[in-house]
Image 1 (cartoon, helix red, strand yellow):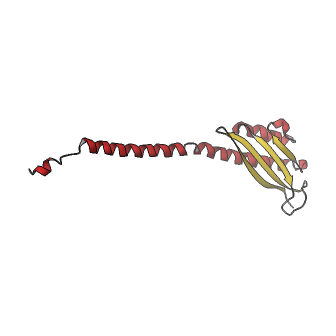
Image 2 (tube, rainbow, N blue to C red; image 1 turned 90 degrees about the vertical axis):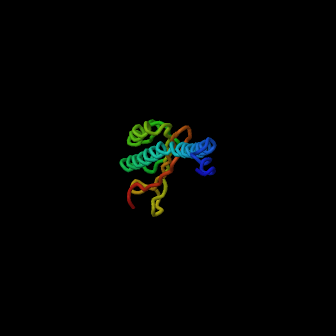
Image 3 (spheres, rainbow, N blue to C red; image 1 turned 30 degrees about the horizontal axis):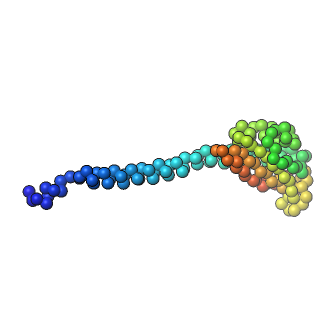
Length: 146
């Protein structure tokens, strides 16, 4: 056997340690990536809940269009809702959205006509607590037809 071949058998302790350090850095990078993406499913679930809540609120407004024009500012209880339909909607939506607060403002319809029972533009703002932060989303819609 040649002398230079004898010195190159297998990996030495230094090579093992270097490869272990490189592997560990890769694992730490994967862990950091996971930590950043872990809250995402909870946020996605809240987005779906808030969209369903907004759809329900617009349905409640359409069911009781005699209440139009309407104005609600930062209501956080079902008792603060001006109609029975909105109070029922709030009771069903609030358990899934902690700290739910609602603002509703009516305005001109899509043609620019003043809000009436027949046709009204509505801005709905929903605020809720998510992972220790207050989040809000604004929805714009049309009640009735012109």
